Length: 496
Ligand code: NAD
Image (cartoon, rainbow, N blue to C red; front, side):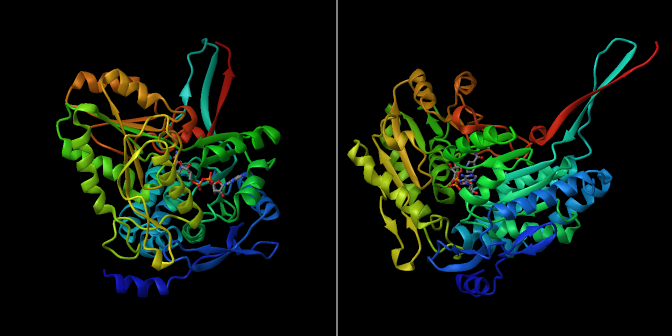
């Protein structure tokens, strides 16, 4: 694979632009489209159906009809599994195309979309297909004249609203368990990255998922997204995105039909490096990767680096050296480790934090500028700020870009206090060779995930989600199935 070959391949990519509603590929009823801008060079790569409330309503009606007549949920589990496996197979067949779509839509490097994003999404579909007939109900301990059993039933119509940072991967974290449990779905991708979700909708039909079961409706958040979250016939909104929108979704649910809401929100995740860590080079690798991978556009980015004061200066040098490996390049270049920031407005937001940090007292140790401006795209240098205080905006607000803040601490108590002094609680990490300290600190950190001597040790078998304002509800693992099902207790009374 070379840059030239990828440029040629990219020219031949056919962008899906229509909504998938009730098994049909259709434009928005209002006839409008929106520009899908590639952050790679600022060009418009496709014009996508700008769906609104009436399209959402059509999709919800199609989903409800499919749920009510049981065309999916009442299929034999073996059959459902076969169809989901077929979907995974088709995604594998089209892996390269999906990877190019995602790279062009949101600017992430092709080497990651080919080896991480799309394979991980496929793995989610397979994993939940495998799980779907392995989770049983319960029999309760009731008096002898009664038999009570507890079953899990699908909720009905699931509205899934997803962000742009891992477009297909996040969509599949929701679509796969929702399908496995027999629900119908209306998926609304982010307006910055609609293409792979639309393609997923098409592939689902090809795989044999009955029409109406998986509907994909592109559009803007305050139109299509809001209409979905306010819809009176949607049973759950499964959301990944910002806290600001998460709050709105809770109020839309309260103001409409009290639908369930599950929120996977942002983070300001601390990575704590103690002086007694066994391998400070590995810790420095993880510190750089944890913030610069995916241009820092990761909810669980290791954006606060807490380092024990006695080793701080040396450790920062190591991280700064490693940052050079993440210099942004053309996302289509197989040599690029990072690519473009998703949009011009997101890039400006990131540069705004960079501007403000020195004014609050942080010291720029590396980067700090826009890059590759001549490309027409939106790139930011991997940036490290030293001498950050936990009160600075850089330590409190989610930047969602390649900007690291280094904070020194003097002892374990202070490290834990600083780590927990945030409204977020998605992930935390710590590096130490002391096993007692590792356990002690891990139990004190208030976050949904804690990684010891490694960062982002993610696996589909472990639930993903946060504490505090990072949200509630979990993606991944068998626990995700709980979100898409309702418990029902059924009791039979008989003569003893
Ligand atoms: P965002 O909240 O702006 O948008 C997410 C989705 O919500 C998009 O599809 C958008 O169209 C939709 N939306 C926007 N306004 C809406 C409204 N009023 N009603 C209904 N839907 C609406 O987030 P983003 O900028 O796309 O993504 C970045 C955010 O996602 C970050 O905060 C990041 O931390 C978070 N994130 C969290 C996780 C996690 O698992 N915890 C994973 C990835 C990203």
